[in-house]
Image (tube, rainbow, N blue to C red; front, side, top):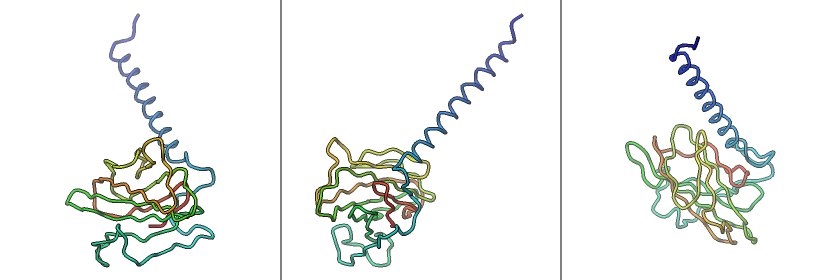
Amino acid sequence: MEPPRLLNVLVVSGVILGLLLFGYSTTQIYLQFGGTPGATEAPGPHDGVEPTHDASPGPEREGASAGDGSTGPQTQAGAEPTTVVYQVVEATSVGFTGRVTVTNTSQTTLDTWELALAFETAEVTAVHDADWEPLGDGILARASGPDGQLEPGASVSLTFDAIGASQSPVRCSLNGHVCDL
């Protein structure tokens, strides 16, 4: 005697759903913890690294007033001499556009860069001028194209669109080093 068709459909559907959920959860674990061993993305100071703040207006800061919250501080990101600047470019009732600029302040070429940003409540829907993938609470962005090098003194900017209230990232890391925005 063959089991009822409804029972077969329910069992097969349950197995498929279970496999999909398992696959999704392991992908999230891989993306969240696939960084450099020992690297942390928790916000806060990095041992031996003091944030650098530059009050002089640069191209990223022009047009921003002191109290509008549109520009984050420049911060040295870990052992690699770089600065990371965050700025809200536009805000609407449903979302906002942000810009992050990474500048190589060292005397040597930065071979590649990988920037992780996390937001408390915003959901990033698009990133421009970089390759990217979504993370559980933010994004992982990389240099687009085969040449991801950043020459001494050179900068790269990426913009992104997000749904939610305008906000600064709650966590930031550049090449596995914490950057405090």
